[in-house]
Length: 253
Image: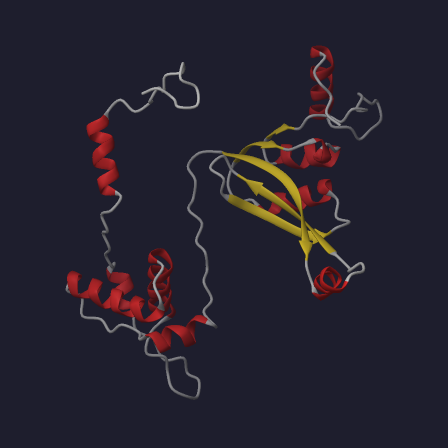
């Protein structure tokens, strides 16, 4: 197959096992749903000991129905019917919360996100971004003229190799990247193999803190970085500066 943009370029496909790849595409439409015995036992609510009507359905039941609604992009009424049809196919005799119950319980439902434990070490990438807070002042200035007040927040994120956000820190616009990077350390669970960041995180505290976690620090030094004889000083940071200097690498700003 020739490319329409570059006629002389022949498109190369990496997929060589077409029958297996085709079966994989078909399996994407296969919906398999089951309920464990623990989920069936915890489907109905238990007595809370408080005054008033006791809940008929547990938080697990409400969370399950709302999760299916979110996955399949269903309104509340259709979500109720979808769960009923699944229970009929599975031959499970369980009551299904109606759409009014789902709407009422969703406003005060607390969901604990359970993180999947990793067998391999985490390769973490840290960076920050500015968030603009648009309020009535900006809207009024855009409509009637003048200068509106703009608010800013700084968001530091820790992302793994798969793009999953493992930790975050939200501060004011005057927040320092290196300080926020220290706060991210306590919020990352698991074994961290390496940490990659830009020169804004090039501080002795960052090196020492992540090295205590057993992580390899990959941070390019700043343009004016130099090996110092003053203490305390990070040996890992000095080695990075010496390695970059010896190779005459490009110094980012």
